[in-house]
Image (cartoon, rainbow, N blue to C red; front, side, top):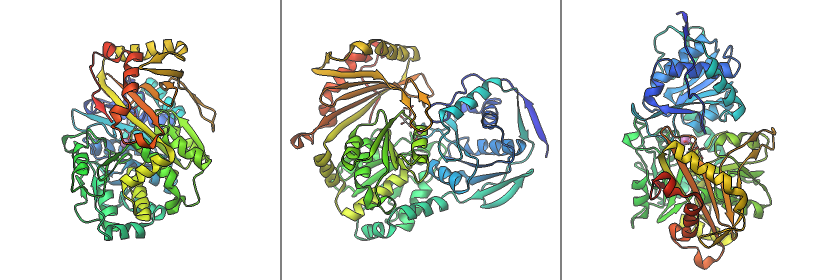
Length: 543
Ligand code: VG1
Ligand code: CO
């Protein structure tokens, strides 16, 4: 086996976004594209010589080929060892756990998460640092710099490694250890939650429907929910990962997981419903007849955390991404703990978790997690909810009603305008920026602006500053609108408009979300001229 040093040229646009580098699969499959980026990761972190990495992916189209390329390049770059999930499969939280458990030098996760998969859809690569978390901006900037100066990459001339069998082999001088993707993750979950109590819950006839959306969580959910916890067989559906996720978007929201939502709203609905995304780091939570917004889920988990063994001594603090509703802020205030507001993307939670300032974190996009790993974790959220339900023996609807009565209700919705012309989207954001200073005191759809700014984040742990993280406009009485452009799309621009309003009167906590948010929706259009600038009469997706 010999090492080839292949001459190459920098390829434009290899800048990691909110979560790694995401492009059309065909772009990744093009000459040198994947190889350049993998070499840039190694170069950006000071080389791979003598290092140990974790490798896995969400099983999408090209996952298997890309894994073999990564292995050959790691071997050629002098890596000591790569720990790979069987068949190159690892959910993102399971990869984060392995990186930490084995004290490795980081890991490569092959995933475009909630983006659809297939030869004409999306692929992605992300690098996680030794703490198990997504590379922070300082590291992704170095990787991006390396993509701009690359002249050659190293790759071993070798046959594919057999990744179908658990065990250790060699690729050149490098060790390759193939591991069961579920075992270590399941062991961690058993430490965090009261499996006996949850088993009793299922034994009492409690019914769950978990939709794995043909993505990576299937094997995890089957082993844990049906295997270890005794949920009736058939509780986990769409459980076999498929390269194109059964032709759907593995995005757990009321649009892409409509089948689950419909079943949970039916008369014979199970007691609890949940879904996860492509790489297993997101979750959607439903009860019989009720959808729990991710922002509310975060607030409930924070409020009830002591019911789970892992958090019985209370939380050090909580953190949410800026566009996430401020429901959790109310819980933090009542618990007397800190609440941090970070930019979108899990990489911003890493320092707070490492420094012990926050225990639980969450995003409005259906990501919740804690200091047990350094990624958001879909199945963790589901088990956390089950633990709470097992302790309280209340229904999801009862828990939500109690929660709103105690803390007030933050009505919340996100409107996405997808594949919008990039120049038009930039123009909309720029026009908003230019009028921020004059907004306070003005009235829109009957509501008065209290404050308006463009969010910038000063990391309290390492002092780094991240600017341009979205425009936020808050109104008297607790309403708020946030505008930002997505950093995970692969076509044009996606404008995200985040709408929130607070209701403290218990008599008005049962409204339809769109009705409760009507003034905010109207104000958003007025402020940003969404229809005129994008040419769209309404959002493509409302979650
Ligand atoms: C989206 C979500 C963000 C999430 C990111 C990665 O980013 O809004 O909250 O962290 O996806 O999630 P953006 O830039 O498109 O808004 V995952 O599960 O797709 O890796
Ligand atoms: Co994901």
